[in-house]
Image (tube, rainbow, N blue to C red; front, side):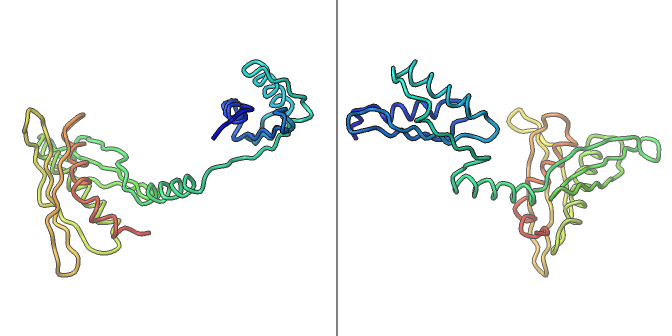
Length: 224
């Protein structure tokens, strides 16, 4: 659409100012600016906003506008409904998502044994489980996986989980942990599998492999 008086250009300029959410410029039939309406974030000084509007129009477009023609409205937050809906969905998703909080490896109760503790959180609640294993990479990987499965099983409203196995493997010049988890619901059971690349240490990858295997299955069975 034609913009003979540069209204859209002026409005685009004003919305680029800090704190300005939207702007509307009204002109007379002769192209003179008669009104400037600004919607701005709360907490900003109205007088300073008016001065910013005056300076921007004069410096960028050569328009001299009397400050009395500039009105300021302020609001705490203005977001499109789509943005609000996406925010609500994301918040809900975070409440239901199992998050890996950490893993701790300490000496076990007996010599040449290790205690592996895994912490997960869901809905703002953090829980931990621990498993003891032989002091070997294979033993610690399996212990980390068992602890993770035990925690997930504790969080379920229905159904149950049992670890089939977790193993450190090498493929395509990378170290991976492969995990198998038996998922049971009523009389039905299914083998869930997942993998995770070893980036820090194998025990952490074992936790992530179990979460990779069980993520979808547990999502619909955790408390709302």
